[in-house]
Amino acid sequence: MHKFTAWHLVYAVVMAAACIISYAIIDELLSPFVERPDKLLGSMWAVVATVFVFRESRPDSLSAGLSRLIATCVSFALCMAYILAFPVTGFGIGVVIGVGTIVMIVLGREEDIVTTGITTTVVLVVAAMNPDHAWQQPPLRLLDTLVGIGVGVACKWTASYAFCRAKGVAVR
View 1 (cartoon, rainbow, N blue to C red):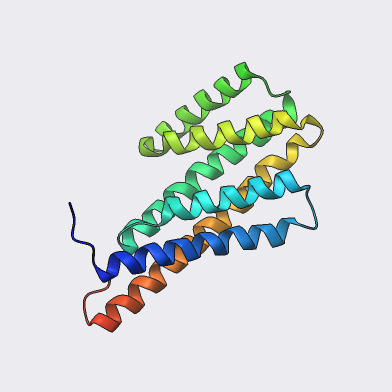
View 2: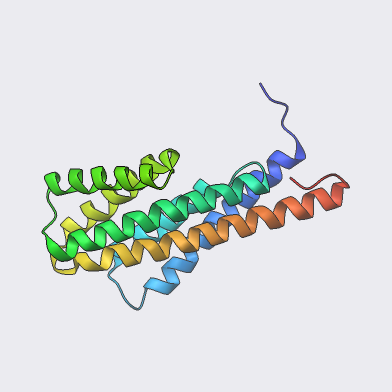
């Protein structure tokens, strides 16, 4: 068991605050444009991105943000192309995940295959729930992810800097 330190408390509080901020930003941004279910999904997706990038060290947080961004951009491009050409089906979801896997391997980002696959699954399943507006899902989820990454990395970096500066130790 690890010793619980002041840094752990700061980390937890700042992560919680970052999640609240991400949720609120997307909630406000999407309110005028989408129905409540899409707004809730977007807020949730921004929080997921925030949690994903909130890592122990600043370099790890930035690296996680870049990984999340690349995986989301690949998923965005593939999902958008698929949705514009075909109705969403289980078979189609599998095909898009397979193509995404190949793209990530070619890009040398094998560690991001899972994130690409999860993102693709969410986007396409939600698109299938409302086929008349399916094309909206990829750009909305990209926006949610960008907000979550930005808020998560910014909050983590700010907290690490402030905490370490106050303690007179090297920045995490």
